[in-house]
Amino acid sequence: MQQHPKTMEFMQIAMKYLPEAKQKLDETGIELSLETIQPMMELFTKVMAEAYELGKQDVENK
Image (cartoon, rainbow, N blue to C red; front, side):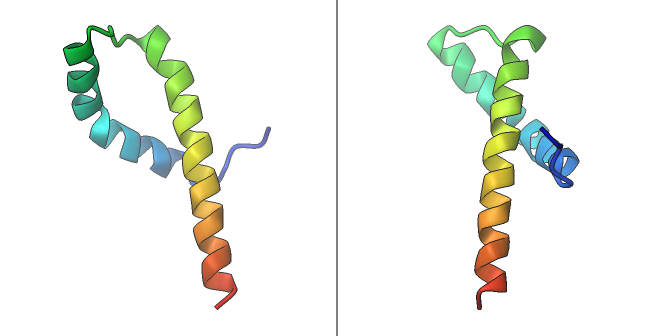
C-alpha cells in the first residue's frame, strides 16, 4: 500500500495527543509501549488518510 502524502503530518497530530492517550490508557491499566503503539499508529494513519480524502472530495464537489 502506498503511503499517503500527508502521513507525516498525521503522525505529528498523533504525537500531539499521545500524552493524553497514554494517560487514559494508564488509567485503565493498559501499558503503552513502542510494540503496542505501532499497530495503533498504523490504524490512526489509515483513519486520517480516509478522513482527509473525504474532506478533499467535499471541497472538490462544491
